[in-house]
Image (cartoon, rainbow, N blue to C red; front, side):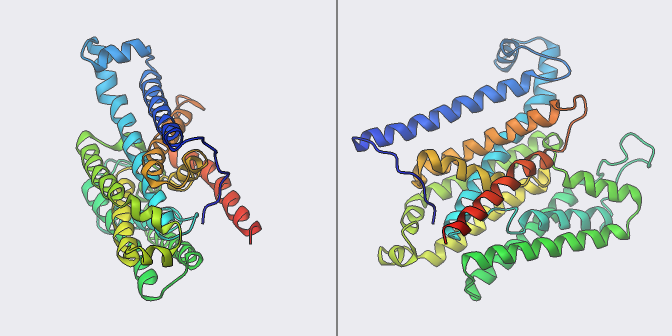
Length: 357
C-alpha cells in the first residue's frame, strides 16, 4: 500500500537504533518548539524564564502568563496534534488507504454540524449583544461539545456500516467520506440560513479551530482519551504490521482483520471526535503527519505510531506559532493554516497514487 525507498543497514540493531534516534530527535524538537511557543507573545519571556517558571522559580507575572495563558494552549497543541496524527495513521492502515483521516472521512464536518445544531437549534447561543466584545463566545460550551462529539460519532458509524456491510473498497470509503462531508456542510449551511447574524458568527468562529478555548479540565479529558487510544493502538501494533502484507496474509496468520478494523476505526474516531469537539476543525494533521514519518521509520507500527504522534504535535505547534505571529497581534485560525499545509499534500498523494497505476 505504501511504497518508500528502502534504507540499508548492516545489522538489525543498527536498523532499530536509527528509528529510536528519529523518535528521540522528534521529542527534542517537540520540547524546543513547546518552550518557544510559551516564550513568544505580546509579553515576551526568555526560554530561561520559561524554564524557571515551569519548575516553580518564576515571579508572579511570569507564572500568570505561563500557567494561565500559554501553557494550556501549548499542551492542547501537543495532545490534539498527537491524537489526530496517530488516529490518522491507524485509519490509513486498517482501511488500506493513504488518504484516510478524520478530515477526509467526514468526521470533522460531522462534528461541525453537531456544533451548529447546538448553537442555533438547541439554544447554546452566544453571550452579549452583537456590539459587545464577547458577542461570539458560546454560553453553553458543554452542549456544543456533546453535540459535536455526537456528530463525529454519527459520521463514524456510517463509515463503519458501509465498510462492514456493503464491503466497500478503500477508494469507495474515501468517496463515501467526501459525500458525508458534503452532506454535513450542506446541513450546516441550511441551519445557518435560519439563524441570526450573531449565531452565524458563533458557528463560523467555532469551525475555525482554536487551541486557546480549552481549559485544564478539557485538556485532562483529551489526554485521558489520547492515552487510552495510544495504549490500544500499540497493543495492536503487530496486527497492523501484518495487515501491511495484505488481508489474506493477515488472516492466514490468525489476525481477525474485521475485528481489528472495526475496533481500531471506532477508537480512532472516538479520539478524533473528542479533539474536534473541544478545539474545532483542524484539518489534515492526521493525513500529513504519518506520511512525513514513513520516509524515516517505514511502516513498522512499533515506531510509526509514536513518531506520527510526535510529528502531529510538532506540526500543530509550528502552525500555532505561524498563526499567532504572521500578522500579530491578530491570531489567524489554525484550521486554515493546517489546511494550507494539508491540501497540497493531499493532491500530491492522490496524483502520486494515480501515476503508479
